[in-house]
Image (cartoon, rainbow, N blue to C red; front, side):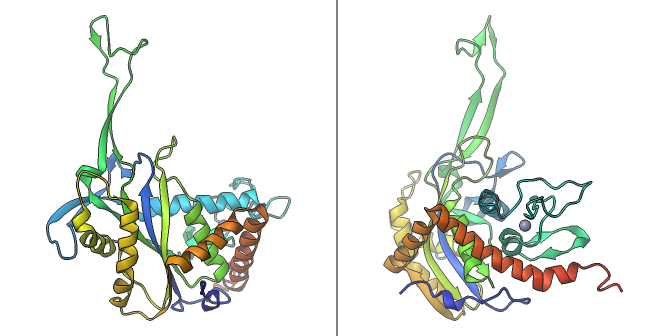
Length: 341
Ligand SMILES: [Zn+2]
């Protein structure tokens, strides 16, 4: 059995129609990373587990810090394969497309309203219209506590010769920065609502390809996304916090702080408890793809993503669906004079 792609709507519906495709993803830092606002790592004080009411501080990754790198991954591919213009939007010329007819889509500056990125992840452009995101994510919580999951680096800037003092003067060029350690795990649900099969594949491709998150001036911020399950349901499912706490309970006997958790053990535990969590969510599950069947589906998917022609076919199909939605619903609504007369 593979993913039942017939379950997805043939076209993106105008109104929410109850098609929820969920990815169970274990995000694992693969290098030092920084997920912060205002110079401090983001954290939250929450219960350790579902059955362990002790409070702990967890690292968090806000939803935009998860989706933005994934969006940029997809948008880069759309430009590389010629589906979007490489030009920036010119506020004076206000051109919607370049000479080759490719839409000009400038992230957070001027959304084209028709590419797979605009239609799946949404956009808001003042009174010129908006599109709700069909990719639903939430803050992700670290499985292990803040104390054992971060490290404070003293970033000093020594003098020539590597010394910290010169002629009796000690350098004051010292900075401290908190970093998330490698091999910290963030269990996450990514939900794609009311998307066609090609648009679902577009989002999945972004999740599988994105390897850096957070402040990314260097090659830090490495994250591997392990997709552990795909669930097709008629409603929303477990929150990231509950998922994290349930996984914490399941792994309790193996926790040895400050040691990191074995990602293989965490994956196995997540796979074991996910069906029970789904059953508790009051949703009808059309399909739950896991284990060997999921591995086979992802292997096929990766084989396609490994070839230029395969990627182009994936983008082409996604673009056809986003453009059809644009032509049917977005363009009409944006036509001047239609509503105001
Ligand atoms: Zn766009």
